[in-house]
Every structure is written in structure tokens, then in C-alpha cells.
Image 1: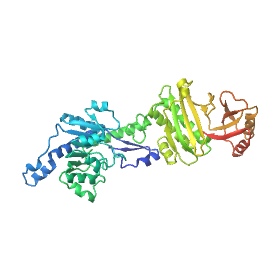
Image 2: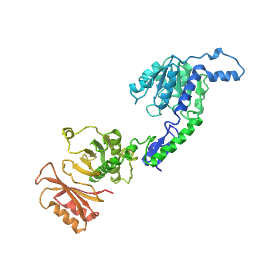
Image 3: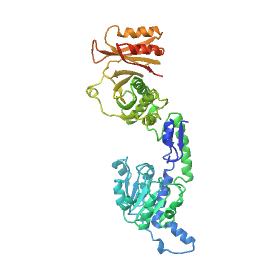
Image 4: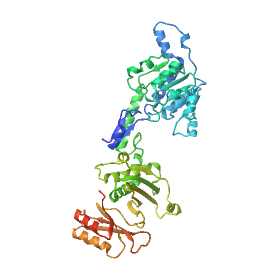
Length: 482
């Protein structure tokens, strides 16, 4: 399975973390039922303001009681919109047409963006204290759970009217009932509930005369059902064809992954992760990614950095000996599960500020539980990833990580140190396809050097034991690139 599609907006009926853990994209169709949900919210607002449901029932019961159903006009009143996305914007447009004053809260959109839509941006306290009508259009998250509660209702205007067509749980239903009973809340309308269908304990709220309630009808129009069905089918086709990832809501960087220009940087990031995992002396605890530059593609955007971090984590986790098989969707979540803290840093090294010889660079610093730390930096030349720096070894310009196996070690920088290694490999019939050596700093005679050998074959365990025993070598490690 690659994709789970929701023909609608809410995905609280999908176990998103579990899907992500298994590398499955979860998508919704955020635009298909926009108009129908917005129109329902406005219908409920009008129904509350004019007490239409109660008046309808009264007439059908054979009564003609006009005095009991005195309503209020909405024109000239202030409507507060919590969540100014697609649905909130349609509500705002209609409310402006009706002559209402529109204020809104949205944690993402800037004040000037909202102003262009006819919405004055305020904070949440401004919504509570300044609105005659409040309508909710936000997803259910830990931050929005019980957003309207005893405290926030107490800070509202006397006689406020509240509509929730978003998700059940945003309104504390017990607090809403207390508000209705006290008269603080003059009217409320709910299309969504904490449990659906509502349980027995909600009967006192549902039977309150000043509550209008509907059975989750936000998307219940012929047009909306056609729209969301068409949208989810089209979005899935686009994902399978790698054309677009619109609507994917558990992974924010998939659209960048389909760019051909990103492919070599993705491979580079994964190789760096693979190196870090197999050069490690103990379990990786933190990973810090830095990127700068780019050629034909900008690798400093937030989306690009998130994608590259996912590839680094994929390489790290796959080779940590945990028996896990991450992909770019599941790797960040798996990293959290095994206790790896990943960070994307925007700090630019001083050397880059002063002038770097590279068009682009990806640098990853890893810290381990034993307190050791390493930094590996790589670049893309043409379309080929290269490793150009490992800690203080900074002149690996020609090292292309190729083949299936790489032998890495640090050796005494003296004649004969590497020939000992070559003799051991010769004795077990392992061919060296390429060799790269870097000195620590610029020149360090009799100091340390770093060597990478690209091999055509795996090294037998006995030969690895022999290499570890050489007094001239340290940090001996075999790296599998597969």
C-alpha cells in the first residue's frame, strides 16, 4: 500500500502515525467540500439568529406564536472566524456581503493576507471578546482540543452565538451546555460532536432549546460528494505518476522528491547517513543537517532540507542494526521512536560566509550516546555525489562513494602504512577499485591520515579482525552502501 485517500478533510478516522511508520502517504481532499461546509455554517448562523428550527416546529405543532421567536439581524454584527483557510475564507466573503464586520484568527496567515480577504486579523482573545458570532473552521489538534471551554466562554460577549462545523472536540460540550443554561451563550449550532453519533450523556445539550444540531452534514451535498470523489481519484493518480503530491498531509516534502535535480542530493544525503551509521562507535543520538548553495535546484528551502533530512535518517536507521527498513516517509517517525533527535540548522559556517569553493554542500553532524561526534560534508559535482570532508579531513575532493563496500580507517601518515592494508586485502582476494587519502589539516607528516578504499568484494571477518589489530590503524570500519 502506498497511499490512503480520504474523500473529505478530516483524517481522524485514519491512524496517521501508523500509516507513516509503514511508509504510506495519507491524503485528504481539502477543497472538494469547501463551499458546502461554508454554506452549512452560514445556514446555521442564520438559523440561530432567527430561531428558525424552533419556529418551524412550533408551526407544525399547530401554533402561531410569533413573539417567542424574536431574532437578531446579522448585518452590522461582528463575526469571529477561527481558522481562515478555504472554508473560513468563503464564510468571510459571504459575511462581508451580508454587511457583517469580519475578524479572524489564523496562526499561519499574515495580517496583510487576511486583510485582502476582508478579514481583520486578531488573536484568540480578540475573537472571544470582540465577536457577536463565532464560527470554528480549524482541525482537531492537541492545541485546539476544548478550545472553547469554560474560561474562553467566560471571556466572550454576553449573548454570543457559536457554530462548530469543523471537528467534534474543539468545543467542550459540557462547558457549552453551562454557557447556554446561564444565558452567556444565546445560541449555538453543532454539526460535529466528540463522539458520533452522540452518546446518551449529550442529551441535555442536544435537547436545549437554544441549540441547533445537525448530523455532520458539512459535505452532504450532491456536488460536494462528486467533488471529493473526483479529487481523491485525481490526486492518487498524480501521486502514482509522480506529477504532484497535493493533499498529502503526513509528509510535507514529497513534491520536492520528484524533481530530477534533487535526485543526486537525495542520494548524497542518504550516503552521508549510511556513513555515519557504520562509522559509529555507539548508538546515534542527535543528527544536525546544514545545507547551502545549490545548482539547478535550491537545497536551502525548508522543503528541500526536510527531504534531505529524511534521506539522512533513512541511511542512518537502515544501517544501525535495528532490523528496521525505513523509507523517506517513515524515516523521521522511526528516528523519533528510537530516540534520535534530528535538527535542521540554518546557521551558515564562517568559511561559507567568507567564500566556499563549492556550489553546494550538505553537512551532517552526528552525536552518539558515548559522547563522540563526527561531521561529514558532501557536494554534488555534475550529477555525482562526493564526500569532501570528514571532521578535520577536508581535502577529499575526488572521493565518489561507489560500489557495494568501502573500507574506512585512519592511519599513521608514514610510508608503508597503507601497503600493510593492501597486503591483507590481497591475501583474501579482495580487489581495491579506488583509494582516496586525506591528511588532517593541510599537511601533517607523521600525523594522521584518513583513507577510504572502494572495494569490489566484501571483506571476510577474519581479515577485518586483522585490520583492527594493526597498531598503525584506528577507527577501522567497513561501510556497506547497499
